[in-house]
Amino acid sequence: SALLADLEKLYPTDEEGVKRVWQGNTGLADAMAVCTAGQADIIYMLPGAYTIATVVAANVNDVAIIGLGTPGAAKLTGSAASLITITADNVEIANLELNIVTTKKALTLTGADNCYIHDNVFKSAVGGAASHFIHMLTTVCKDNIISDNKFLSMLDVSGGAITQTSHITLLGIGNIVEHNFFVAGRLTTDNAGAVTTGILSAAAADAGNLVRHNSFTEFNGATFTAGIDYATTALKGSVIAIENNLELVTSANAIVNGANTGAYGNNTANGTV
Image 1 (cartoon, rainbow, N blue to C red):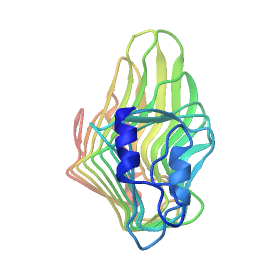
Image 2: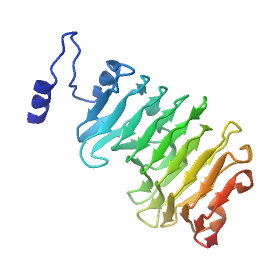
Image 3: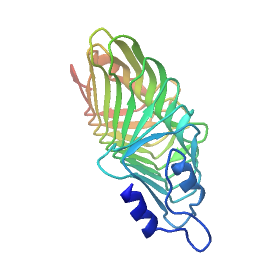
């Protein structure tokens, strides 16, 4: 396109032979491969649809991946186990739409600290079991911020069911989850569906995480089995939940195993907990 041609003129291949403008579905991985830690490199993704067939490894510190245009105009989907796996620190993911299919993940964080994930749209709109939108896995993640995202588990066709393990699974210390919107829904009433947990803290390694000012809703018979679940294995104080709005049909599902944490001023469909 004319825009790509203009970008290639602005960012030509440099003296070391490194390209600065990539096209196609492998462009994100190609761009990551030439990033350098400590330079605050930024990867911009033009609006459009991208198919991620192989996991993109965000393994360089201090890199930002930002979609251009309105939030979600750059749309990632694919069959990879995780669209993006973050093992580096100080990584920013912003303004993207990340679509997952059955049993897959959008973002996996392993030992990633000080990352900023914001203003994205996460979607799961397929029948059958799906996995996680954001999964902190194996190694503790510290001091990350997950803010101002939309997490949407919704069927957009008649028939079938959607089942998802969690929207966010925490494993770490000092993480903040704030100002996000969590939805379990189906667009026709003949669909069945459930999201097991909106935000799950299931490990004894969790400590001092803050969940505040988020909203949860469900409609047309789809449900959250738990809006915020601290699980029986979580230590007391693993997550502090403050002033979240959980408009769930069954208010007992709003905050589960709350004895393992502190929950203050959270609104549910049937009152305040």
